[in-house]
Amino acid sequence: MTVKPGIPPLDPMRVQVRKHALLKEISTKPSRRWWRFAVPATALAAAAVVGAVLWTPTQSAYASWTAEPRAPGPDTETRVERCREQVEEMGTRSEMPFAPAEAKVVDQRGDLTLVLFAGPQSRLLCLATPNGQRVTGSVDRSGVEPLGSAPFRFTGVDGQRSSDGTEANRMMSGMVGPQVGKIRVDTADGRRVTATIANGWVVAWWPGWADATLITLYDHAGDILSTERPEFE
Amino acid sequence: MTDEELWGQVRAGGSEAFGRLFERHAQAVFAYCLRRTGTWAVAEDLVSVVFMETWRKRASVTVEGSLLPWLYTVALGVTRNHHRARTRYKTALGKVPPHHADDDHADDVARRVDAETRTRAVIAELAKLPAGDREVLEMSAWSDLTQAQIAAVLGIPVGTVKSRLARAQRTVRGALVEEAL
Image (cartoon, rainbow over all chains, first blue to last red; front, side, top):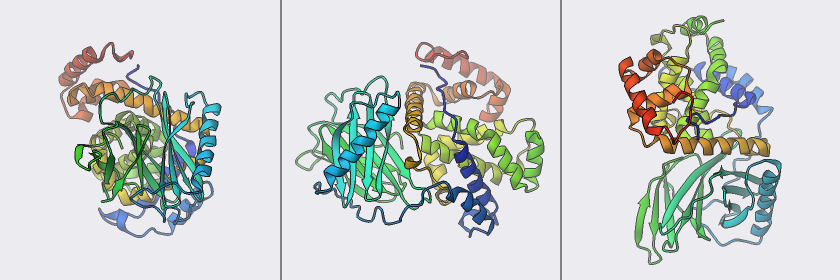
């Protein structure tokens, strides 16, 4: 392992998007609290540049989200299959060891379905909404270490954001032992989210860009087993 | 046009010159932030934070040669507590048209997750070092700065840079491979 891991170049378009946003912000600076002030007309040009290439979502995509998951509904299996197709396509098109992409957890909140696919070297999350599905996750070439006797191991928080910033989500995942009956995630913006546990894995997600600040593990009697603080966002 | 010349325009309020400096150095700042945090989206946000902080402090900063040493100084600060840095600029960052997963090809996604995986593995190894030693080693391995510049960035004497670097190299040698080690 090298101390200087290779970093792929930023997409030139993303650099331009960031630059225009930066210039827009600094052009509005009337005081030290400049970012709270209104955007001037110069912002319109920048918005036009990026608006042509980035998707603009509907603001109501996450409207049905609930802090407590519910049982899968009649549309759930269709969404799981769409996610599986997308994950398999990713594995086919790249050299990354995505496969096998076995659906370990299906988390249903309102009409929103989050599926965790886990393989020997991968952990992929697919969030399916009425507007489509998106995949994120991570790969570990050295393989996913078994949980052993530990009650829980946090594997990461992923996030997705839409082009206009109105639609964002964070997704927490981890491995969980049989002694754990329930997991609750507290977020930086005050949400308290009950996770979905299945097949030795756990997932939870919430709208917005707030970090997970505390993960509380309960046993099957409802007593607290332990608490964890996420290391990564 | 050199960094010094562009920075002279920036200090006079030239946002276009600042934009050129951003284009010139965004990748280097991004690479440093990603290697420090292990999360692509966070590193992208921190690039914006670094440049917003740089703009805010432009009146008090003098550039000799490259702007990079100062950018690394700011990047070091914001990555030490990136939760706080991103919270401070939350509203501004919220206005940045974000990345959307549907815009990506699978290969691009794979490249990103692979980079995150590799950087997190290195972060885990470097976490075994004391913070002071780790920051010297990171700056030495990940930037093209001289030891004198690293000393200025970290606010420590050059002799301390040398001693910390030697100690850190001894500790991680074997686990991490790098010509600089």
